[in-house]
View 1: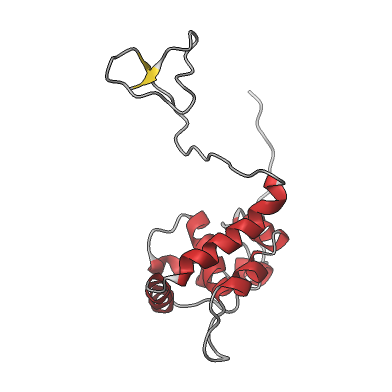
View 2 (view 1 turned 180 degrees about the horizontal axis):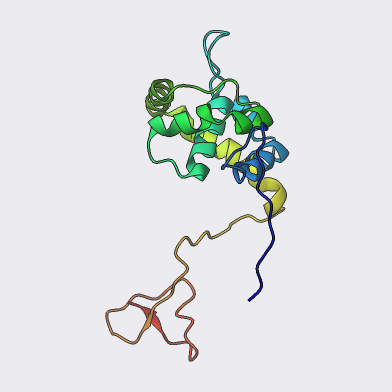
Length: 165
């Protein structure tokens, strides 16, 4: 039996258990997501308000951290190491997040803003494509029943006659 040697030590450095969020934050920065969001979403009415990108950054980090409730923002707020690396010194509180989401949900122009942000993000990847099918459930169940529906692939079973049940 091989016994691994290791050394235990103490440190005064800041540590985080959320290091995986660094890659998400880096991706958002690389895509210039904050600039794109702030270009299309309504800005705060006061100079002390949060920009739309600050809300989205917070919500995206919370989602990737595994948060289920707006109150889970406290996990990000209390993580000093993550806060210092990602410059999270200005995070909205849970009630502020909820108020903003409700306010944005009532504005019909939000859909148009999302479309514009998505177009600006997807344009470089899609190049000249006019139409793309996003299949969120790519599982095809091939059946040979009379009342089964054809898939958009016209039933891609090995013999080409399958239908989706």
